[in-house]
Length: 243
Image 1 (cartoon, helix red, strand yellow):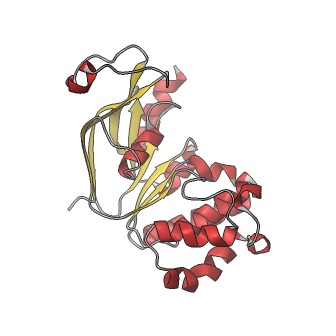
Image 2: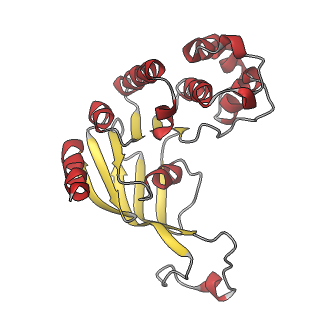
């Protein structure tokens, strides 16, 4: 049985946050033309994901890659179509997601892990491992807002990688961390994949995509233009962007 089903999904955003939709728009069909100032970040996207697949999401900036991950994480909802996720999701898609600026690192670990379903006892049992992996023991009582972007990535990845959720979403946030810690994270991802987890991985680094992924979803203009082996997806992307 598929763990994720995406059926003819579309999501529409406004370029101008101050633009307003009329009362008539509330009853307009989803197939209507976009109003001035609106654009489709994704349109008519369909695919299924089986347990244990490692999928790389490929495309230029602004083509809907991060939006697709947010749909799978159910952070945003589609304007048309349907997304069905049959397993729990561990998302590392925004380094600030779930963290409170004025709370300490210690408090944020408990808060964020709790928001993702871990009990306090489970966090107690894994707290030392979380902090050790993040290499941030000297900053336990430091307010989160005083951490560098690299430190934020460390603690976020460390917490998320401790979750037992079957589906892992990784956006390009790891690019912020230093090279040594990034490699440590990548080894952890490989361990999770070896344990049967399902991975969605967004990156512009071809080497990383080939390292983790066997399947590629290539997005262009908000549409899924290729779905197949990662090597073929990367070749198609390279051919389209080199001309």
